[in-house]
Amino acid sequence: MSVRTPGVAIAAALASLLLAGCGGGADEPAATASPVAPSTSVAAPTTAAAASPTPAVTTPAASPVDKQITVTVAKRRVDPPTGRITVAKGDLVRITVTSDVPDELHVHGYDLGARLPAGKAGSVEFRADRTGLFEVETHETELVLFQLVVR
Image (cartoon, rainbow, N blue to C red):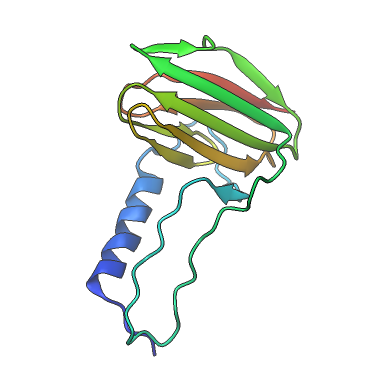
């Protein structure tokens, strides 16, 4: 029997809320993606009394990606300008965004996100395993960064 501390339960509940925070609309596929590796991770705290330790999530060192997409947001302007970016189904995609204000990156349809501290890059990395058109946006400023086309 494992012992869970209130902190672990709260961290799990917050993680669930963050992932569910941006509900999918009718324009999004209902299936969920299996990301290859998140660029940022938070390991739940454990106690010495726990029967089995909680493994920490790690990011693989310099995994080769098929498509690197880099976006900068400054004064509510997206650079490069909002448009469509096409990748092949099965490609390993890394999206890196730097914003001049704190925000959150979100990839619709894949339900992936990353915090964007002001002036620092945030990234998501995933296997583009579903075809379709997916919006990539910021949550706080509600900017569409680009539309990801997976073929």
